[in-house]
Length: 380
Ligand SMILES: NC(=O)c1ccc[n+]([C@@H]2O[C@H](COP(=O)([O-])OP(=O)(O)OC[C@H]3O[C@@H](n4cnc5c(N)ncnc54)[C@H](O)[C@@H]3O)[C@@H](O)[C@H]2O)c1
Ligand SMILES: [Zn+2]
Image (cartoon, rainbow, N blue to C red; front, side):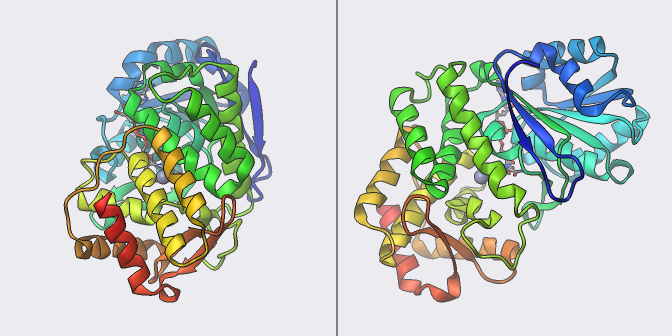
């Protein structure tokens, strides 16, 4: 198949999987799926939502049929609030009613919400069947579709139920971004800035320069330059995931998968205090990057120039919703949410410079440094 490929070999698998980054290859998705799944797969169930399926569903289904798959589609409701066990159960019932066997596969067509839920349902149907990812948001292309974290939200919090389940292949067709709302592009670019900030100057500068020339709304998603950026972004995420596939809780080094949570501790708190309504996930991460930079400065490990640079580049991704008018105490309370994910203590991902992440336990950070950063960001 045409397009660029990144091979992702996971230590836990005999065979790795490949991410194809293409422009306009959705029409050949059936052939690609056949290459990924082999000849013993009979059925391919497409999981999507009505918004995405209206744009790209027919083309995908036609292509799968042409490659000899029996296919059917199950659409979840559109929205983060539907990424839950109830939707998962409905998907599983559908898989069973279609007689999906262990030779068959699920094909996720959509953003991170569809990909996370479809992957999780595939991970538990018959104790795990194969699934393919066709991400259609920028965030899903560079982040959520790669790395094998699947799951849904629960009463106890976001992404609290899930499984590590690697896809058998990822197909990125950047042409699908033509219909993506500008705000969603901003959200994806904030995650791209996050990758750059922890990866190092080459990726950070490439992302910053691209945003300088093509801010969301004025970007040319199908350009070769854009494709090169997407490939570098995915390659970075893959390089981290490859050597820490399940995010080993004992690791705190600068290559640990935890570094991908840069900007997320404050970002999650922001999503929480606004009841997950005001911010797209990436937008909250954008504010979280600014917060983490400020905190790093308060701890005297990051200089003012780099704080300013991070601020500038985050804002190149687009306008972010303002920080809500809630007091510092409420934020400090909301920050505790991340403890559940990291076994009792918040593990802050800070920066000693671009490309120099540092994981620090909250117990090693004076409370006043956090409070000062919260107050500063509320004022801005
Ligand atoms: N698994 C992981 O490693 C990982 C990493 C990061 C984020 N996530 C998860 O990803 C989710 C966020 O994903 P997202 O930002 O892609 O949001 P999303 O899946 O909700 O998609 C955003 C919106 O864009 C629409 N859309 C998608 N593709 C479109 C297209 N091509 N044209 C027009 N509209 C389109 C969707 O219907 C939706 O309304 C969160 O649930 C987050 O927890 C997972
Ligand atoms: Zn994220």
